[in-house]
Figure 1: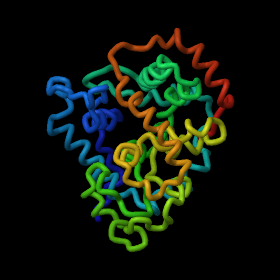
Figure 2: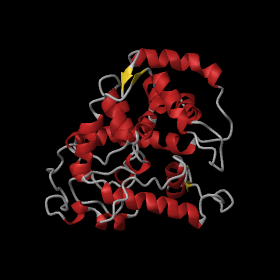
Figure 3: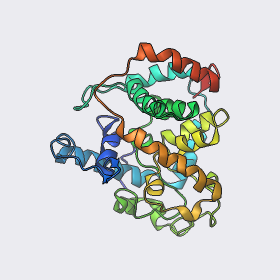
Length: 292
């Protein structure tokens, strides 16, 4: 098998989020909101679709059980950098790509749009904070990780890959696909064992969860850890691995998802005006510095 693990098929880290919005149109009281061809004018051309397809081809080929174990050993030592949450946000902002054709927002502004929408709806402050920090794990890109190992839909490894995962045919190139240890419904797991015993594909979700797991309420940790697990919170394909606590907590994951997907708008948040509120909120829940 040709080694393509160093390829970085996405020119823009937001390609994945835009593809998600195309796959999951905005929900309204009347049902899914259909977007016009004009609204999708920059996301339905063959070049962008090929970019996303190539991303998932690489992701699905290399996200194996052993790969996840390797990445956990490498990154969960948290020896890359020690910094405050605000330094992490500034660090993340170096990922800004001017090629985004629909909106000119850096990572901080996207996070503020998500959290301000949550705040406007009167949710608890920990939920607001979760919206603000949920993508901080993307700093993995700045530690040399390719985007296919940072963003993208997440899914369990160590058991059969569900057909509801985006581009499921690409898993046929994954060594675990034909490995009898991993390719059954339960694989290395047991029925309703609980997601805390299940290894997820490696990316920014799991990484940030591991960094913050001692600081935030349990619903916040579920949101951070599983907000990209679309084959479950949209398709319910892995309920057989979940316990009662998982099912209860996934109501929060589902509640968060629309704020993450559908709050991107061309009006930039007033960072200067909002920052004092978020400084106090961060201080309430997180230590002065975090190890990445």
